Image (cartoon, rainbow, N blue to C red; front, top):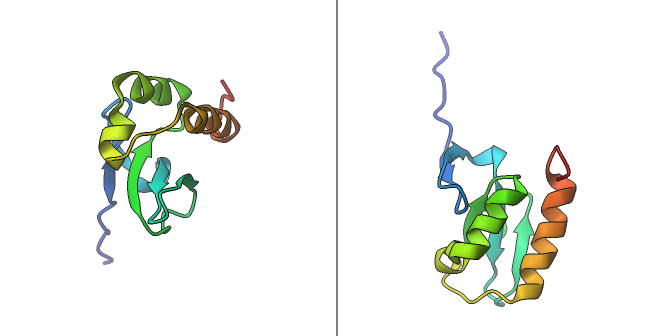
Length: 94
């Protein structure tokens, strides 16, 4: 009988829901202070997680929870880019 492995859970900074790590999109602050989407989940730097739901990004933007999680101010242009990328990634395409 095989033992089931525990799935790593992470919290979405938008809706505060707990989800398996693979279902979330990682936003990373690199050591060079760039803010990028990390589809592999392995990029070096401080990470925060978002659902693929564009509403979660809007909530995170409104509450500045992404800025708190990354401990770094986020320019408006980066939010716009993230919103466009999430629209591509999300199943509904909002």
